[in-house]
Length: 322
Image (cartoon, rainbow, N blue to C red; front, top):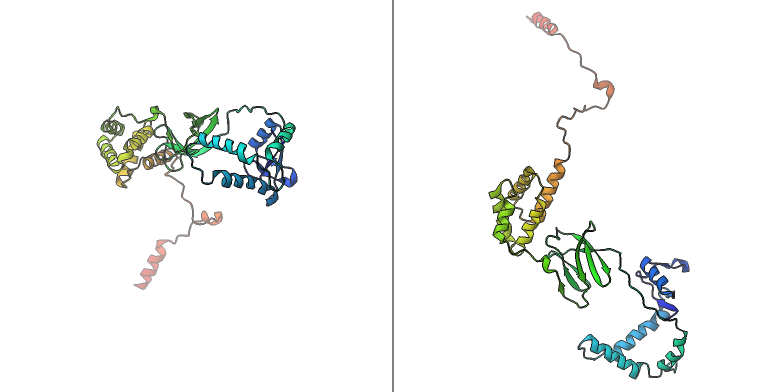
């Protein structure tokens, strides 16, 4: 392997050029130390160094890939190996007048010995947004998550890679999914354990969840309306409601249900938000006997009482008029 590698300035590798005292990203710096090579970063807006690499890419694109019929990746890989041996590495370079294959025979003696890199599990957790269908998108594929993972817009999970596997944890670092990373594209990878429980009919589920509310019939009618308005996601909606009413006080359940019915709210996520708000308000101390605050902030005048004239003074005045 080379003793020095040339890189373009990219935020994946470099945090700051720092006047030549390069600050590498934590992960890339760890990789460089494990491999033992030196790095050379192209200066910004330096077409002379960048152009050499871009020319190689363009050469492969227009001399090998153009007009070539693609069947599958293994066949393409074999074709490019044949092309390298037949054309790319055997033709004399127009500028240097050298044959790449012959130069390689000389230069390879100056390379450092190659040592396989043992890939450790990547402990870095990255946030991913959960889709409405309880999946996340990762490298062109969709990976299933347990039912009711999606709890409204902005629901997040965290993922990490470990020896070719994708580990998914919730925001409390509890593991919720573990998959072998799929190398294909456009696939849905899911766990059969995450499929909905169809052993229980939707009607039975509605009756069961409605029974958790103090006002069973009102709750049942409301849940039936959710089913009618969202037939494709009814089981997910009702499952989410069931998850959040397990330990809720009866009065709060009644309050949240009443608000939803009066305002024609038929979304599980909205119901959960209302119930959460009612719980917060229930724990907020309320003082109904606040002391009266005087209009004036002048302490001297606050304690003053107005003078009172005796009623006899007015009686004498009236008597004199007679």
